[in-house]
Image 1 (cartoon, helix red, strand yellow):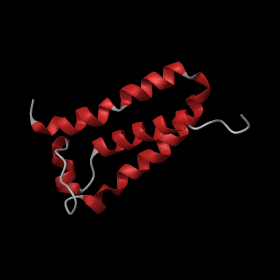
Image 2 (image 1 turned 90 degrees about the horizontal axis):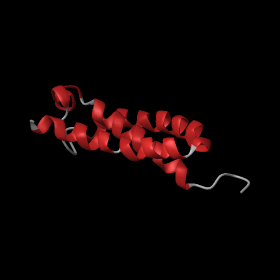
Image 3 (image 1 turned 90 degrees about the vertical axis):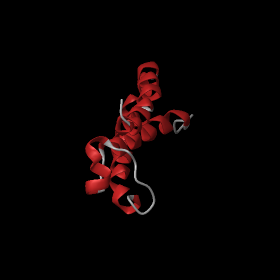
Length: 92
């Protein structure tokens, strides 16, 4: 395994709690999807940070060559969907 898979593995690891919460809490599923899809767009801000701020070891060296990578979209998707689970529903 090369170091190019490290960022993919760690970004994808955040999908595990996302999947667990999705499976356990049926009422939160629509909110998780909506928030995850919106926050995944924050992964597209990576050209602001690469390579000025950091240079992640991305698949196919996409971050270095294009400023974008798939791992940032995965990470942003998973983190965004986990957050709504812990906020109380309105009216409760």
